[in-house]
Image (cartoon, rainbow, N blue to C red; front, side, top):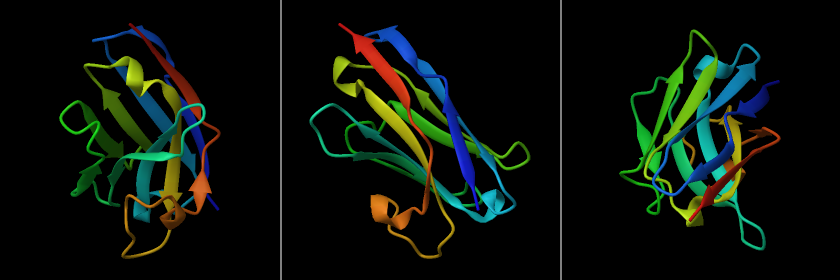
Length: 125
């Protein structure tokens, strides 16, 4: 069992930065792939970024590549999403997710079996 709690969301002006954190409980965190997804009102959930269990491999959605960075600290059971050069279209609820499975397709939400409650990110123009 893994419980996930996101933090760090808020209101920021376009061009600004935010860092989201996702604190995980449970002994399986260090062996779990982690992902960030987002969902804007009226839109489908979108893949943002993912990282494998060791942090050695990272993956990004095309709309955030080059602006966002995912990282993890297994000693702290925490995964981060550094978001730079934010745009109004980045406004959404951001969800942290964990996958305890192997050989997953990182950009698919069905690859993840645990989800956080979400944190709101609002980027003003």
